[in-house]
Image (cartoon, rainbow, N blue to C red; front, side):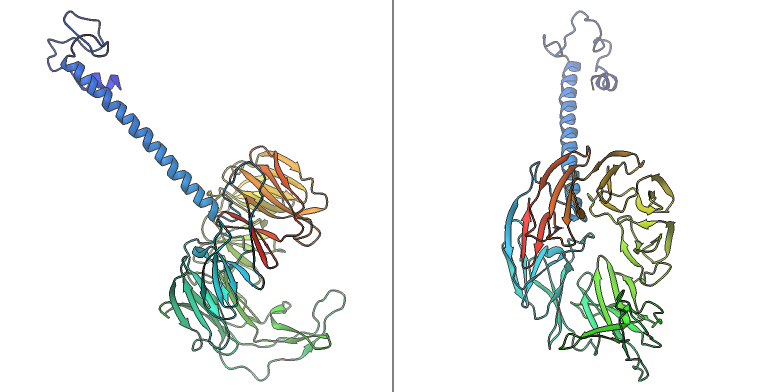
Length: 514
């Protein structure tokens, strides 16, 4: 800063003054030494030092403010991410509050957060206290929001859409404060056998069969194989297509609609068979070519029904990965969608317009939790190895000799993968193993994973029920060191993360841990 002052501010009288910083000349003075009266150059230097110091303060203050803003953004990304938790410190969590919900059902309501549906009433649960923050009567047989078990990212700004059943079917849109933003009667929009579900951004999704039903459609009873429960002698020769529509609840306008043709299901007839149990407990199955359901979950409209299984984006783009129609897709942070299927060893990535962006050998491993950071790689399991591919073009980034079966945490600086009791943490950019450990769970296995940005918090259970021997274990993401263990949780239910809160949901109860 002094050098800039000397170079940019020459003395007013160059012939009468010595150059600043040179050896002392008779008659010259300097405020830097603090002796005598300041010369014009000295006064200029003082002003320069003050201005330079102020500039440093401003820059430092700006950097601090910028750091605080980025920290807030990172915290917002964390709590909005799948499995993301607000940090609560180094100690093991304890139950903060508990709410009994006998007969009620809990859903994730976007801007409304955790929502309780109970006998026609919608109530928001205050995550800080467990109290009901507000309640509103909407209607009987409610369907609202997203199931709390869904682990994909939830749009925290999205409105809460509810669909009521009964004689007068109606859709209602609520904001985060419980105020009604729009209502729509569904009686005139739904035909017999049609289905409706809450949709994206204040809409409902409608699906109904089109055309006249055929009198020649099968209705024969089929048998169940006693050995494997499969179906015998099922034939589905014909059926009707469907129309899928997304309607704005506030305006009644159709945002988009599509026709889906009937396709004979071949060997996959599960969508075409209805199961019945009579009064004596005898089970029978009947072909039902009119079966039809729809739901909107994780950014995807899912239509299920005999011969019409199909997927659409929230904007109405048909999503179909190459192969069988039963292959699902999920949205990914890099944009677009990735195909998921338990028995298909090829992964396809789709752009937002539904076109195939890339395909790669291997099965996509959906991360159980993330910290909200941009993910540098898409992780696949292929031939007993972990393969990382570029999420944009699918080219291989690295391969690790790790038999990963699931991704517990995929964060900006670490990726934690698991295979039964073994855990590996790798560098997401190189695939280098940072640490590995064998979980001392005995006969427990992992059923859930969360992160607060610095730790992996894993849920493990014994047996095939989440309420049988549940244990929470935390690991430091950097070192793999076990931070704490909470055991003896067999009386409670499964764990979920909503708005950064770690919740345990059981039969008729919900509690927060932290």
